[in-house]
Length: 451
Image 1: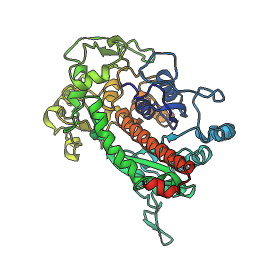
Image 2: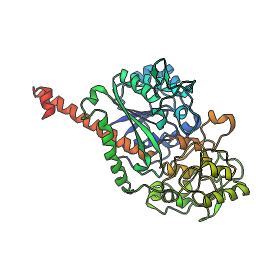
Image 3: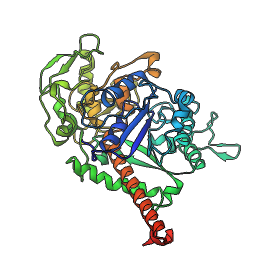
Image 4: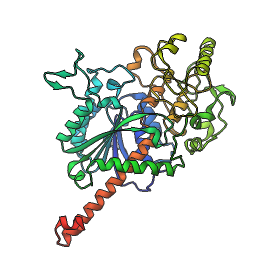
C-alpha cells in the first residue's frame, strides 16, 4: 500500500476527517495531505497517531501548516480563527476532501431534520469558497439524497417539494461555480469485504469541468477505471468480492489461544486472541508492514454464558448474510431491529458504529474493533486510540473505536477515488499546457485544443 509517487504534486485538505480512512486512502493514491479538521479528540488522536506522529508508516505523513495547532478542531472554530490563513491557501490546495457527518440523515439511525450536524454543510461550503480547490470529494450515506419530510410528515411544503440535503449542498456549491454530481457506489466492488453502499459526491470548478469530456461525469468514468487499477495493484479478485471469511478467518479465537489485553485504553480483565499470521491474499495485504505483536484493538467482548448460548443458536438456526426478521428476533427475545449474522462466503453487511449490530459467522460473539477495521479495509498497522465503547448519554458526545471504524471511509475505496482525482488533475494540467503552447505559437486556443 505504498503511494504511487515519490514526490506528490497534488495536495489535499480533509474536513470532518474522523479517524482518517479517507485521508489514508488518498495518501495511498499518492496525494499529500496538508491538514485535517476533526472535532472529536478520540478520533483526532487516532488520526494523529497514524498520519502525523513520528511513527514509521508506509504512506507520506501530512505536511501540517505551522499556523494550525495539531489538535481537534471544529470547522466553525477553524473559520473563526483562521479564515485569513485559509484564504492564503488559495491555488495551493488541489483537492478538498471529506463530508459533513451523516448521522442526521442515515437510514441506520433516527433521521432528524433538525439535527444540527445536517447544517454543517453550510460551513463546508464557506471553506470551499475560501480555499477554492480544483476538485471536491465527499462521501456520505445514500440517505443524504433522500428528501426529509416536514415535521407534519408532508413531502410538500407551501407548494414546493422538499429538498434532500444532497440537493441543498449541490445547489450551494453550484452557486459558487462548481459542477457537482453524486453517485451511489458499493464499496465491495473496490475490494472492501463489506456490502457498503455510499454516496460519492465529486465537484469540479466549472471552468475546469468544461475542459473535460462529459464534465464532472468524466470523474465517475475515471473512478470506474481506477477500481480495476486498485484491484490489480493489490492482487484482489476482479470477478467476485472479498468475503468475510477471506477478510477475518485469521482472527478466529478457537484456532489459537488468548492472552490478557494490555491496551492502555482497556479497563478490566479482557482477553484478546494471539495472532498466528495471515491465511489469504487479502489478509496478507492487510498485514503487510505490520509486526504481529504490533496489531492493536484485538480485545474480545465478555459475553455472559447465556448470551453466548443464544448467539450459538442464532448462528446455527438463522439465515446468514441478511438482517434477522421480526419473527426471529421475537423468538430469541431481541429488541434491536438491526441484527445481522454474517455469512462467511459473502462480504459482511455494512459495519456501523454499534458493535452489536453484527454477529460473527461462526463464533458466538460480536466482532472486535480489529475485525471491523479489516472489513473496512484498514491495514493492520493502522492503530486506533481512545475508548473501545461509550454508553449512555456519552454516545452522542464521544467517538470511541467502534464508532471511529463505523464512521470511516473504507481506505481501498478512498484510494480508488484518489487515483481518479489524480488522473483528472493530470488531464487538466495537460490541457493547460497545450493551451499555453498554442498561445506561444500564436495559434487560436480552440484550434490547438482540437488538434
